[in-house]
Image (tube, rainbow, N blue to C red):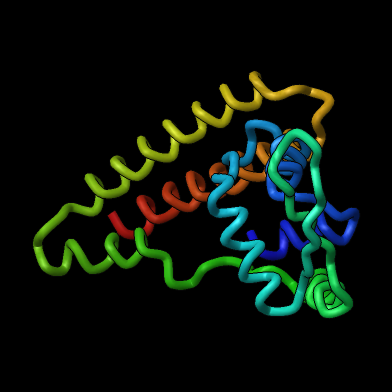
Amino acid sequence: MRLHLLALLAKEPAHGYELKQALEQIFGNAYPSPNIGQIYVTLGRLEKDGLIRSVDVEQSNRPNKKVYYCTAEGREALDEWADSPTEGPRVRDEFFMKLVLAPLTGIADRTVLINRQRRHYLAIMRDLVELAQQTDQDNRPAQLLIEGAMLHLQADLDWLERCQEDLA
């Protein structure tokens, strides 16, 4: 969440509720709506770390609001974020560890584990299909986020099939 908020602030100064609305507008219902409390806690940490600064803006009929700005240090952090690759495939997969170790100890059958995991993935896939249908087709970031999740899930389903062929 830190760098997501920082990226929005690099575009333009904003207060917490504007940042929440921007995330919701950009990603739609494809990305869980952030908790406003979490946003303000994160903004406080970013400010403490010198990546953003804030000014109080006076409002006539409401309490003052804090508007946050990205600092030069914040832009440097964003440059590093943009220039570094994101974590790739996970080698320490919790399900795979369960798949290999549980049958060794006699606490579970591999076929049962694979079938349970497959049902779980298929339920998530159904939810993603429904989410895609409910998402504004013009919101490309949201559509791409959902599509990416579906492709990762399909790869996981294919991998389960391979595990069943090789291990069960």
